Image (cartoon, rainbow, N blue to C red; front, side, top):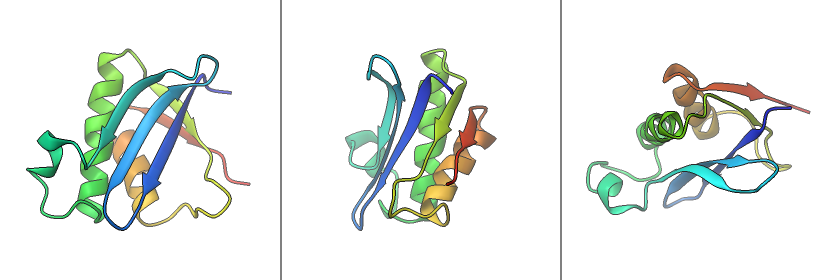
Length: 103
């Protein structure tokens, strides 16, 4: 098991993602389209380009915290496709090794 887990939340209005330490439950890196600096740049806060931007920003913040690996397990109702896949793929493309555990 990886010590850090990825949590992705996508609604109709915004996207947020965080990397959390599994034992201490401390969030080491957080990114969301509701923050002032990010929402001013994006055209839409809940489309695929926004998901890719969140993955890129989260990867940068994770690297600053010396986190280079993590795991992602989709919630019961989530499917690993579309926007969630875009966030995870963006993290992988930007240097964070994410292991995806599908049931």
